[in-house]
Image (cartoon, rainbow, N blue to C red; front, side, top):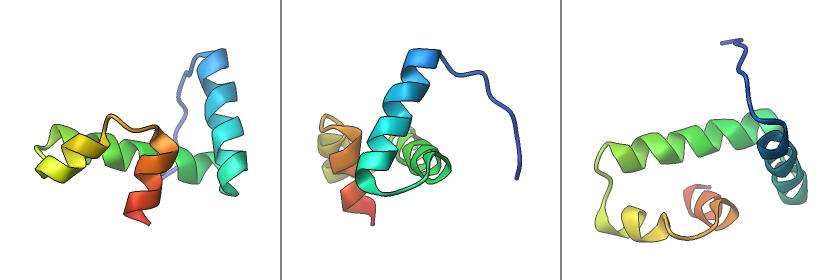
Length: 64
């Protein structure tokens, strides 16, 4: 689905840099970040909740 979002400039730059450092597109990075947030807010497992304190790049590695 194609959509438009308004994202804070600094937040976007940080997300884009993090995506680049992981060798993925900003689209894939944001997709993974949203999936992690939705899993957590839906009452994920204790392990998923424990991992939520880690940086997003570490969390994403667990979902690959």
